[in-house]
Length: 259
Image 1: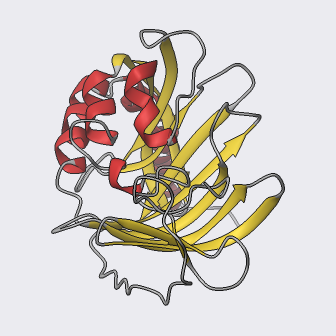
Image 2 (image 1 turned 180 degrees about the vertical axis):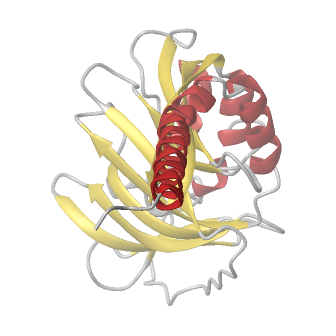
């Protein structure tokens, strides 16, 4: 049976509409490259400034320290802890510590004193805690992460990454060695205080602009990274039962070598 003229015209119109819609759809498909263009336009310096301000106001956070390679004079290779930063510094967690051999130890920092069970028994008073890890330095405005961010030179965007479910902008730069020493817990460079140390930070691109991770290259073939999460969550720290110990000369308690 022959098709009527109106039917042919309707079919042609439908075909033309389909082609038109397909063409529009193809043009829209090119937007997939836009996120890359947006990433390249990140204001790295502005984001670092926002993160600097945010880090000065951290009240509490969970932190993870991890190292690769060998870092001179740094006794810990791994730390996992919960930190109360305000109104006063307190922390608790576990650390992998080199005391001749590597041990996994629990630690508690409260009232300006560090307690740890390096021997696997009762906690021992290790004084201010510098010989294990100085948790008070992490968000200290004068020597911790706020200072490192403020001293970061030539910040450049290096793309976006997701860390433990957190979207971040990765930013690279350098910081004088003297300014990273505090978060490492020791002198971490043999090249002098003014040596520029490769430093990378991962910052939330929106919201509070918290630092999710910071990584430094203190010496060749070694890295030290700190990762943060759970900002603002309540941290409860209680002084542990402490084993009796005779004070070292001058009234201080034991260091890692027992002196």
